[in-house]
Length: 429
Image (cartoon, rainbow, N blue to C red; front, side, top):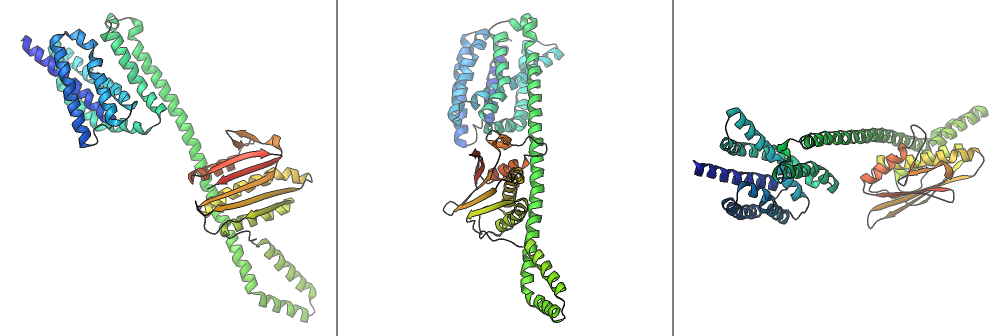
């Protein structure tokens, strides 16, 4: 009977080592190739040998005390070598140790229900090993592996609870008997950790939801601006087509005017000429460069600026083909020029001369479009947060967020600064 108990204990120790080792290796993607699997199983076989020697030479209490040295430390070295990583194999081993708790607790529950002793508990642990291992490998391992791609800070946060449990288990159950003594501070430690972890998780989820909500709001605004930009471009193109049609129908207009003159109706001719001139003026598209979208946008804002007593000066060249969609180009230019007009409006109303300077540069070698917009501003009215100008007025400030979002989507960069009373926006796409 004694020999059977010894055999069961030996099998149970070997099974928990394989159980924890396989989970740890799966958590850190150490079994992806055939070569890695061969090395892993060779390493596990070599680790089981000293465990067997320790089992035969020393008692169970001593084996537990040095278990981390003869199992966890060699396993960590093996997994670090296979994955070429130092942090995640450690987190994987700590997590696998935490997953072993389910196996141990179910076995204790089975022994309690069956009213058995230590042998029944060990048999129950053996019985639960394979089903739990298959479940965890199927459902838990893929989710844990995804965290390998997360930043180090997130990996450390994930490994905090397993590390606390590992230290608590060894300190209170293996190296001391504080847990069996039932001290209130010791007994309530892990429930307190669970409560703290739940609170941190709640705050983390809440902060993440607020961030996602803000991103959805910005995304909705971008979609709205893109829709408006498309409508504006379509309207300007329609106006340009109407202007071309007027020019094409010039002969008919002249015939009508000639008829008015011949019939001695100069007033009607004058009114007709004034109407045509006004309509052509509103539909005029100023050509600043080869890019049609840029010409349309600048023309629309130039008309608005003139009515406010503000001038827009354009220099440089923007080619017809640029690595930016018309809608995105419209979002950037429209928001930047809108902000420039808003900054100049109170100064122009006070009689100051305001000129908005727009400059384009295109580097054909790397396909990058550079441009800057410079406008006068009152420095005390401009506030920066993390290098980006922000508005204190409710409902404002979305324009800068839209510009930044579009530029980042294209992998570009932007700079905002104030020099000598001039606000400067520089960016490349």
